[in-house]
Amino acid sequence: MARVLVVEDEPNIATIIVFKLEREGHEVRCESSARSAGAASESMRPDLVLLDSTLPDGDAFDLMPALTSRSAVVMMTEFRDKSTPQRALEAGAVATVEKPFKPTQLARLVAKLAPATSLP
Image (tube, rainbow, N blue to C red):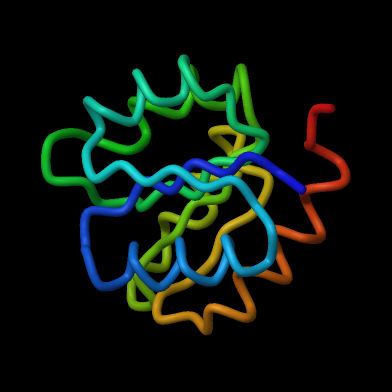
């Protein structure tokens, strides 16, 4: 299974994601800010980062170069935001997921990406 870093500032959403991915057997760490996400990515060396497009203390796109140099990144965006998914892919994200999403949908995406990204 994969090491997954979840960067999500909404506690309810973060709890659901972490619960589902841990049940699927992934090692999961959750951070709620841009500042803590960078440090967590360095120490954890995740296989996959689930990155919220809107963070309270910084622009998620500012994090992308550092994150994509170490890990595959999936950006989670708001449904009504039409430009962010394309921008995320251009910045190096391997996929995007529109909120609201079903936890099962996200778990399937992680499982699909995990074999290509997991480190022994």
